Length: 300
Image 1 (cartoon, helix red, strand yellow):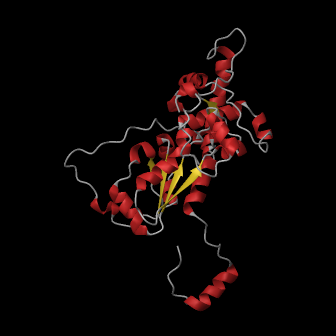
Image 2: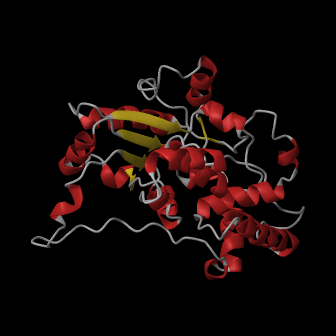
Image 3: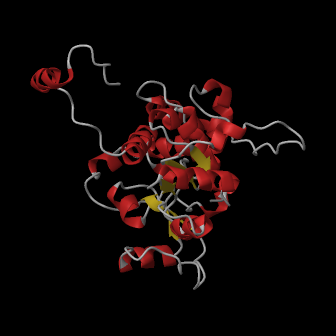
């Protein structure tokens, strides 16, 4: 989403002072520093600038935590330009964990050697993100390794490479997960991916969200842009509720970047890895030894 579409929430400013100066600027700068520590927890997560913006809004609105069980999509308490000024004053290089803006994908030169064996195996799952920066954030936090699931950005990956389609088909029962914003273009992305697959049997497309009810349940800050045209919601999922359709038709949207980074990583891992195997116990281990013998190769 463009910056001009973010909602005109009241900036952090004092009467008679311009935003970005004096006490208000120092308060915003402190909030950005606190938000960076929260966004990186636990374990030093990497995060995007837009994720840091939403985390700063949560720092400046501590009452939102008390309303966590009440569904809703409040407006951000800080204008994006005011946040950008505070971040510039603090210095991006002084924010540990902040990722640089995603670079445009590099186009291979003619005759450049490729890796022909990259697509020779079955690919049981794939994650496509609407936002290039969110895809980069998941990659920077090694989600693709932990979930054994390649992570691609829709602007770079669509239409899917025919070799990638063949790898999905070769796996048998493969799943393409789609992570998108709660907005007209995001809601339509799973259908766009499904149409782009073409006649590939055995491959299903699953939306991980967001949809408006997810945004409301998580109390994610939402923006408001121009109302979409009559055809913008034509590819909305059938499970979308009338209230959600009306929310989208009014120009409202919520971004995946508004989900706290740690929660986003946990949710993506849980949904892409599938159910975990049952945890071993002493008794199940003893029962297993009777049937497998002591020299069996240990399970990973």
